Length: 270
View 1: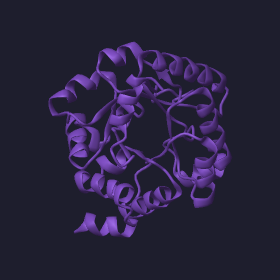
View 2: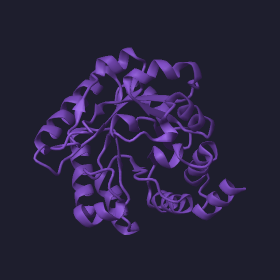
View 3: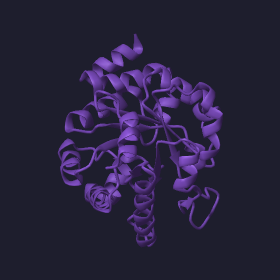
View 4: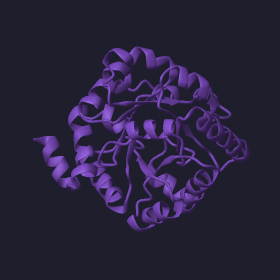
C-alpha cells in the first residue's frame, strides 16, 4: 500500500480502527425523496457531529459540504447513479466519476456498489479491476459495496433470494481484485456473517440497508461488531433517525466502546 493511500486510510479509519461512513448519496439511487437527505449538507453535518469518520457523497456535493467539513473527516466520492424511473432496468449502474476527478476534488477514496449476480457481472468485474488500478495510481482508497443487487428490498427478502453464499462470493472477488475495504449486508445469522469476514480477508463494514426500528438496527450493529466488522456504511438509518447526531454516536459507541445494542439504544433514548 502506497504512502498516499495509507494517509487516506488513516483518515477513513479512526485511531480505534473504526470506520463510520455516512452515506449522504441516496438521491443518486432512488426516485423517492428521502426527507433526511433533502439537505445533504445538513445531514452530513449532523453525522459528523455524532462521530462519523467519513461522508460518502456524489462529486457535485463535495464542494457544497466543504464549509462544514471537519478536518479529521474523510470524503468519499460515490461513483454511480441509477435510472430509477426505468421500467426495464432501474438498477442499471451508470458510473459518472473518474479517480482523477476524485483526486482533484480532494476525496480520500471512492465507493462503488457492484452486481456480480446478473448478466452485468462480467462488466462489473472489469469496472472494479480498472478502478483498483486507478486508485492505486493516485493513492486513493477504494471501497466496494459488495451487497445484494436489489438494495432497496428488505434484508429478509434478499437473504431468502440470494443467501449468504452470494455475499461471500462478491466479497472475495473484491478482495482478490485488490479492493481495500468492502461493505456488505447482514445475513440475519451471526455465524454466516462471521464466515464472510473470515473468507474476505480485508476489512468488512456493514451496510445499513432499508430503514428499520432503531432498537433493532442497533442490535444488528452489535452482532456484526462482535463478529469482527470494522464499522459501517449507513444512510437512512442515520439521516431518518429521530436524532441523527445521537444515532451516529450510538453506532460509534458500539464499535469503539464495545457496548451492547441495548445500552446504545438506552443512551439514544436518554
